Image 1 (tube, helix red, strand yellow):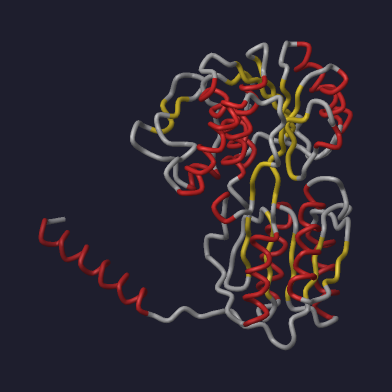
Image 2 (tube, one colour; image 1 turned 120 degrees about the vertical axis):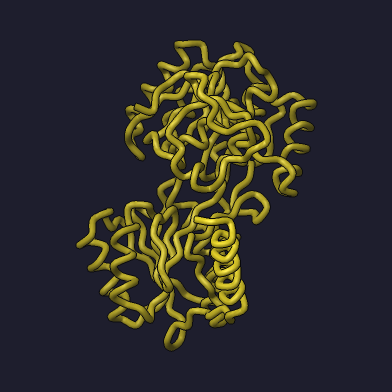
Length: 364
């Protein structure tokens, strides 16, 4: 293509973009009085993932003055989810909140089938004109948790128990390691994946294996209490996820990476009630700045100087002046994944399939 043709093409694209930007945004309108229902993939008060979402449901009820219907233990299976949604829609419910990644495809089909119903789905990977998947930048808080782990470690070796080696888990593992390295550049981080979201027996065994290898701080990226119990029995420290997990390890708990889903659900559901909701075609991806994720209070076992560094780094993350995955980011094999001066974009975060240098473990 000639230089002139290139310029004309660019001008055409820019003009089209400008025209789009001048179009008024169209808010999604539900029909009738808002009726909200939550669909849980397991027991709502499960002590972890679902309980964090259920806490947000209770906050929505209190703050918006609405009553929300619930159904629990609906499998991540198309027919079961469809039956639950159809039952709610048939009873006049017009706002459906899903609670798991496994609902992504099924809830997309439901959104197409029920175009006048609004859908939002926690950790959902699908979006539409009446559907918004949402998650939070957990890696931001896991970086801070890694700083705490390094500050409290006496052996210079820390471990983390994780579920599946997928992007939203790998970014937590890598952030944990990078945060630890910011305090102690020589620290060793080991990850073991259980290839399950819920297996207390396996999680306990994995934790004991990490402890036997000399890891004296254990991060638990899952929901069960088994890793905390094992760490506590060994006199080791631990870090929780999803909720404040201090009750499971009253002596060794350093902090927990905690979801605050009400910070997303309250304004989102309020906008639906008011008729001003504009779902993003890319889904919602708030973080510490929006308050959807954060740390519970730090234990005194984290040295005062490290606590001060964590507070400073947290302020930088919230202000947008520090990026966890700013380059250089180097993988285990020495490959530069993010160059100096660059920042890993959201697409790179979601597709993260590597572990950073300084981490022992495998995503394969």
